[in-house]
Image (cartoon, rainbow, N blue to C red; front, side, top):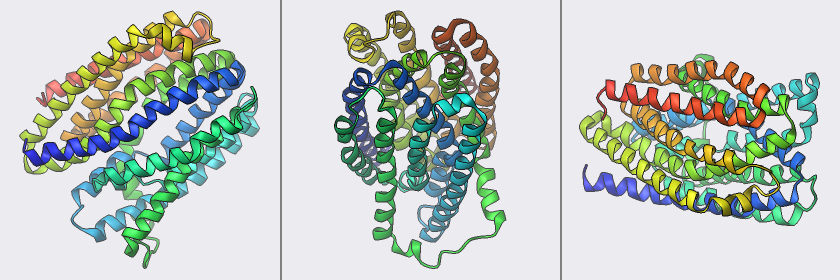
Length: 420
């Protein structure tokens, strides 16, 4: 690995960790506040709405954060090609956003359960709109991590303080969701302004292409979309299944624990993938062995960071439970099990996204997709049975089992293809 490669990764990771540092801090401040102010039922509505919005965001993103990032990274020297990719993906995402609105309206009218959560879900659509407008893949593909970091920071600082101003009653869950959703919408708007100011020619002579162009873009992301859908099927579906088969209290408890683990785990995994994926995808073309060495260093570093995180969390578990899960009885044992998930989630994510997708080609992309698709489909009946009979405990065990299966599967194929 050359000094420039290492310097590039460290610099991009620093900017992304700057954002993730803020992402660590904000939940540490806002989550206890919301758990104190909101009733257990309303925090359940809050969690259910976020889980629903994640399904819709998944539809709108359609795997472009990986496929488009890779495509832009490989064509970063040609501004004309990058412009074409930008508009192709943006137009597809706008179309998918309108599809998501239709799906939500149908769900509200045909399902009493969804109707019960309707206000919170409608507010969360602001988040889906923001995701539609925010071209994270463009910034990642062009290695504009500093700009991406600043946009994220500014948008959150402009919105999150209003949680403490407007969320005052136990029934204000819809307001909490709206304010947090605004952060993503602001990020999307600011990013468009930035691109307009720095790449104004993008907005000149913009025309719709033939339908086949958009179909081809969708086809390139289809396998990633399937795998991401399967991931969401066994993660976000747990919250939704709890909403259908259990009480909003249990939805709130599971949602609170999941958000804590998400802060601990994805705070590391997110910047690693975002900073390193375009570097590995581009480097493998000219020096595959060097790309493999970078991948191994990242994998080892992720494990060590997760180990330190786990030890730190166990030492302060009582404090975390008292601050974050106050009001939820008997959450200690469940949290002890939940925290184990940071290892398979983080390491499985690195093995899959940086290993099979970053280092691999079409064959490895198909393997990546098959792992998540197979496990996701098989996990659904398991989750339904466990949640139906064991409520929130069943959701926790279901998630842990599935994460371990995915991690072991990813590791098997990484060894098979001799990436480590």
